[in-house]
Length: 299
Image (cartoon, rainbow, N blue to C red; front, top):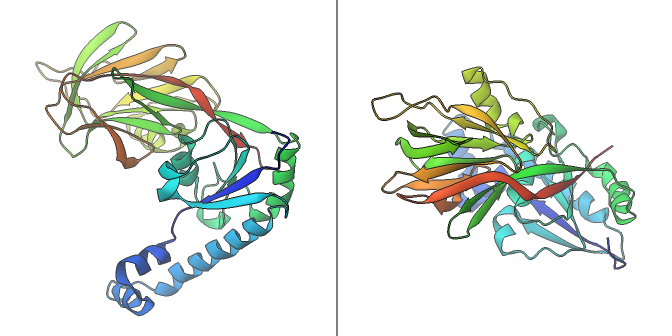
């Protein structure tokens, strides 16, 4: 950290209750909508109160002579992070993955406002820890884990990074068609797309794929390694399925050449709206990113 007092950037996403009000305008209309579907607004209201209470406590945890900013997840692409920021992700684990690609080494503290409703893999902290953790970071006394990220690099120089996983495929339920090259071997495939996951991502989407396919990969979140999976590759006269899963160890990479006329996409960490177009003739190189996520260990 620099000699200047840090700025604390608290990142949240809208609660279910806030989203309902945004859609239905009033509490009464939102309540009617839920009741007509056999649901109770009291539950989502309670979670909204928990989130609001945690956010207020997080703001109080910031030392009086420090500055802070509150950023909603949907505004991350327009927010300018500074070198001296300490980032607090207040929410579920997915929020950390959502913000990772916007950072460049800033320390991140993952905090769950409601530990009973989250896995807590990326948000293991609670707001009671924040005053001490913020001071530990500023005094360079905190412990960190450098979580590996993966990147997709197109020939035009465009890059997309992910903390959990990258998806390469078709934006709809159509088959993705492409040629994949790994370790000097190339195969044309027609599949449900390719997933490339980090050690962090092995606890998410990749975990469900491994469960369904009996593939087993395990490595630490800071390992310079990623696992790839071709989802349901179809064996035919023209397409194969022999390159269905494997590991990428830095500095190695895999290459995918699109054979889709339209609808091909590459997106990161489940955010489908932020994608790279991946249509016929476009080639992408996927490997370990030089940048990592600097996560504070909460204890």
